[in-house]
Length: 131
Image 1 (cartoon, one colour):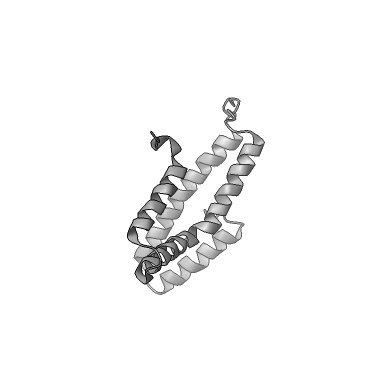
Image 2 (image 1 turned 120 degrees about the vertical axis):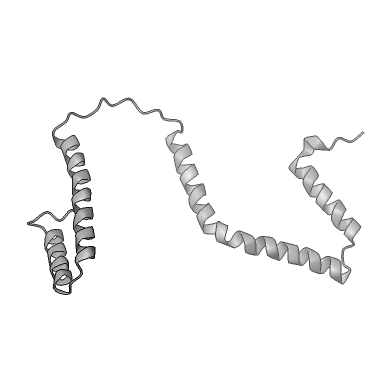
């Protein structure tokens, strides 16, 4: 990206800049060259740090999760990326099926509320205390 002379990046920039100068596009060429100089400065800083300065003292890493926990977390996050695009479709299909059941008269609205109360009781049993 910096365009170091013996490499292809340099020749690519050279040919693009020379053809732009032939067409009279001075402002874009000046902008591209100034940005190239700025990026080269940052690349040189990284190279100077890597080759000429000593490496900073390395602290021992803190491992918060075991290997198996990290594998499980990676697998679950990958599955989430696979399943997540279909979640709105599944929720909409569930809502549509409940709506069609109440519309057709198969389930009354009172039965539907009892059904959802039972689902909520299964999800959080400590909230519902029977006397």
